[in-house]
Image (tube, rainbow, N blue to C red; front, side, top):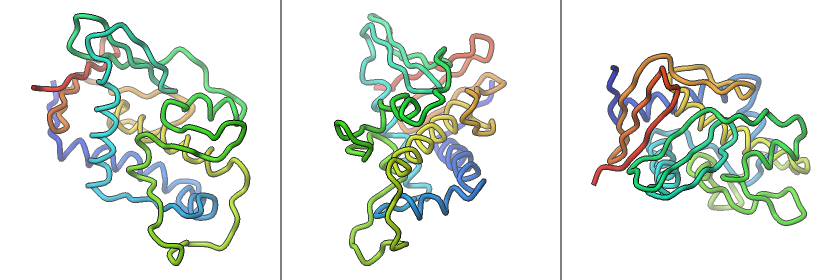
Length: 204
């Protein structure tokens, strides 16, 4: 079983996400369509993302619950001190609105609109500019494209973690090919390649 410490986890997740962003002009896309926001691709930003995500995923430990995360599903059971992550059985939505709704655990829309109201964990990577003087382009974003990109980024980040070491591909649901024991701060992530599932818990 391979063991991966916190620093290596942050680097692997960051590398997976950045590799995805560099393909097909995705970084340029965010410059043009997410006006007022910028990508923060530093190691501290990825560490903050992982801390925020793992805190969110483990909040229902010791209770019966299940939540769709898009490519994956997180579940927990009463009496268990961990949550389980598996591939979701849901198919990739074909419509823009369907895809946006697929990621509504992270990206929330304004009622009746397409503008992003709240980003739960992706906000650690896609941050607002502090002043109007630093906007990259004076181009109005197309309706819905900003939110659609954020949903793609949210899934790419998730796949960079749970498909650790695999190529990010939003059309698939990658998982590692070997047993892993990983650590991010006080969180332990254990992957069983035969069961094809992650278990996550927090050390106390």
